Image 1 (cartoon, protein in one colour):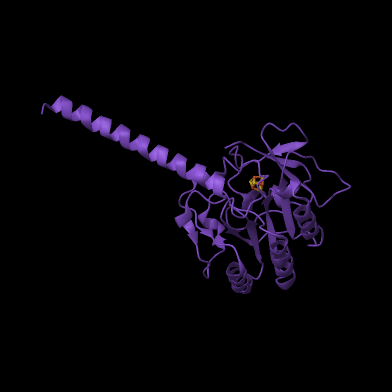
Image 2 (image 1 turned 180 degrees about the horizontal axis):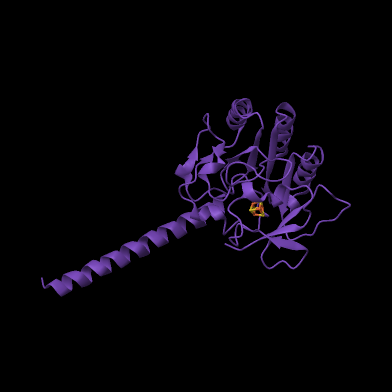
Length: 252
Ligand code: SF4
């Protein structure tokens, strides 16, 4: 076979392979959207002794908090299964970040996970006298009110623990009520922002928001996304109790 024909066949085979992979990924995501799961079922892990991951392994999160009242604490994160733990009202249900995160380890939610988190919090708060901050949830969300209350219990049990993150539960009222209470009763150690295009209202000081880039309310743009700062650990705006403005994120 002439070399030119061989080259053309090779290129056609590569194109066919790329198209096949793309179609399979698209089908898997569509299946996940319809069945309230992650696209990457094999990435859902049984909880182990290290469900909380060090922020120094995640460029966006960073490691030692350098600002706010939480200064000096170490950053950790928790990743759950997207959609399986999220409210269907989430505006990123279809185009979730997790659709493009095949390598993230999601931990299966349920009683085993709660035991694993509790045990690791004991270890980490013993290890770091300044305490730790847990970023909830890189993927996933609060799956029920008992789980929100679990974090309330953890904040009481570990006085050097702080938590921050984002939730899609602004429109699911019983859950919003529970998360409001978590923020309100935590003595500024829980800063869960609502992923919702809303503006801070001083009548509701426990409700802060994270908006999409087209939102025109009273906002500031996440400085990590615009390369003005390295990481959440060096920024702290989302968990700074004095910053009431809505944080605005670029669409992905
Ligand atoms: S505004 Fe700051 S704390 Fe909030 S996500 Fe961006 S870098 Fe992290």
